[in-house]
Length: 86
Image (cartoon, rainbow, N blue to C red):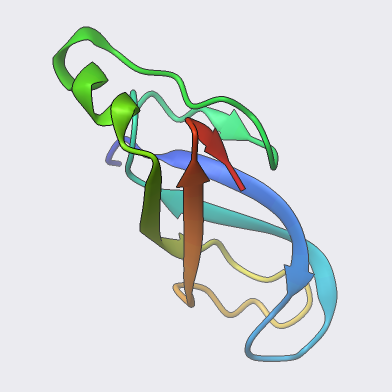
């Protein structure tokens, strides 16, 4: 299993259109399987801390399996502004 971070966010599954807490995996910041909520500050390590200075970043994310339809791997986007995920 690779290292990534997870964003927990209320949202709608693209497949079944039901609302739930989506768990979106993304790779940015320190990768140690950290779990974030909206507006959390991103954790950094020494080798990639220069990325912290970027004002706006849009990240590719992949959703874990939906609890209703079990569809996984659906694409989502995460956004980082001023070092907070939103």
